[in-house]
Amino acid sequence: MGIADDAKNKAEDLKGRAKEAAGAATGNDELKAEGQADQGIAAVKDKVADVADKVKDGVDAVKNKLSGN
Image (cartoon, rainbow, N blue to C red):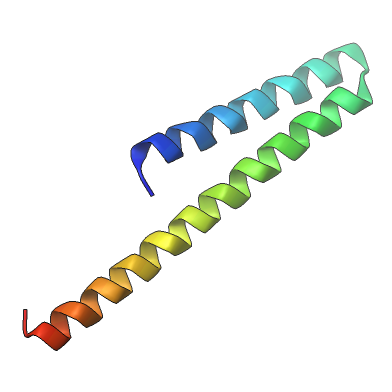
C-alpha cells in the first residue's frame, strides 16, 4: 500500500486514542469503547496492507525469476 494509506491508518489510530482518552477523562464508556474500536480498525488495516505488500513482493519475485531477471 502507499504512504497515503499509512497516513490514513495512523490518523485513524490517533483519532481513536484521542476518543479513548476523552472517554476515560469524562467517564464516558461509550466514547472510550469507540476510541478502542477505531484503534483496532486501524491496526487491522495496517496488517492487511503489510500482507498485501508481501504478496506483491512475492509475485514480483516469481515474475522476475520466470522472466530471467
